[in-house]
Image (cartoon, rainbow, N blue to C red; front, side, top):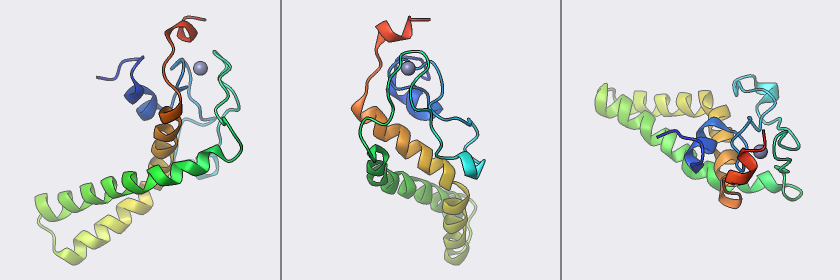
Amino acid sequence: MLKKGKKIYSIITGCCPKCHYESMYINKNAFILSDTLKMHEHCSNCRTKYKIEPSFFYGSMYVSYPVGIMFAVAAFVISYGFIGASLNIAFIAIVVTMIVCLPIILRLSRNIWINLFMSYDKSLAKKK
Ligand SMILES: [Zn+2]
């Protein structure tokens, strides 16, 4: 499922959306909070500029809403449906999940956002 050349690969791994060669982020670990949103300016392989226009990644806010809902629904289904917790505990589980997974939600929405505008290019991937 996770093969280079598919958008889902770039979305999940956070690599360059055009060549899938290297990570867009300076620190691969999203949970180092000071580096969560720090990105390279260009791809070192294909020279793709990630920030197409000023404030480009503000648009990822629109994506982060449904992504956040997905995490919340997953937390609810697991705590209420599978574990059988009460509604109050399920609510707490949702809040904790949203706080703990915030760096992942932020990066996932950025990855989805940039992949809406750029596609994999086979000719760029073969450069190196
Ligand atoms: Zn690239």
